[in-house]
Amino acid sequence: MKKKIYTKLTGIILLAGATLLSSCLKDSRFEDFGASKPIVEIPLSGLSNFSKDAITDAGDTIVKQFAVNLASPSTLSTDLNVTLAVDQSIINSYYAQSDKSVTYLQMPAGSYVFTDTKVTISKGTRTKVVSVTFYKNKLDPSKSYMLPIKIADGGGQTISGNFSIKYYHFIGNDFAGTYKHQFTRTPPAGNFTYADGETSIFLPDSPTQFEVAGGYYTGDIRYVVNFTKTGTGASATYSHFELSINPDDVTRIGDAGITVTAAPQIVGYVEKEYTFAEALSLFDTNGIVYSVLGGSGARTNLDQYKK
Image (cartoon, rainbow, N blue to C red; front, side):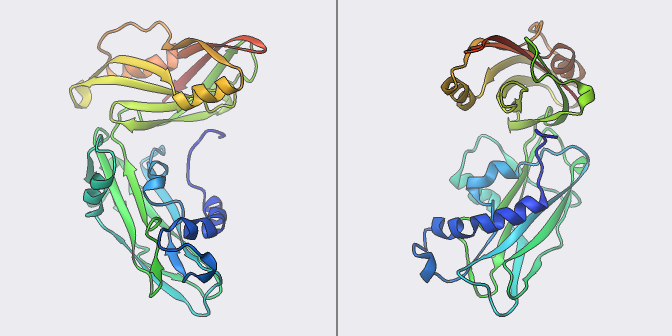
């Protein structure tokens, strides 16, 4: 599905090659790639890619794959043995460097399997792909968890200072996950129904905020949804739903001559305490609506999401 977010093995392999030069140049210890020694790295990792390692996939068993890459002017003439490790102490160092708005817990025993700790990059090659499996049903969906996987030993080669840790994490947000998506534009154009099989992800920013793409324009204009949660477990209630459009997307469509004339809101929304099932119906039965004005005229956009 065009909006479904997931890790593709093919994409990782291609990106591993694409990031080969840039990764070395970004590593502050090396300025001249041609004169540098080989560097062992995990492409698309590190704090700069933290958000990409958020796990929001549907289902209870989730398999993620990532590459271990040799960034160097040429391949090696012998096999390179690299050691990977789960290092929970990295959670503490993460707090020292980053936003502390979300409290991450260690993933408990039984909630993941990671056995590819010994990685061999065969001579004449650069990349080896490994896997880690997560069992989402072993986690409390209201809590946030992190599984940091690092390069523990580079087999005698230098380990990248910027791209050597995968920060896999779950953000505890009750609405996170993949939803069926239905889009209706007035006047109609690009409309699709639930039957068309489109999906979008409610991607958590925090335990009480998530973002999700709508169907208008390029299909990636993001709603930002904030809410208040009261209580825990099955008796929890949800209220004070506040919606906006991601500021970067407002700027982007503004540059294209499109103005938001009516801010997004939940159709027929009434302020009260909603059960979880009632809150889900706000996005399905009701939906999110907003209006815009561009060079081609006025448009009203309705997005509905079904769990």
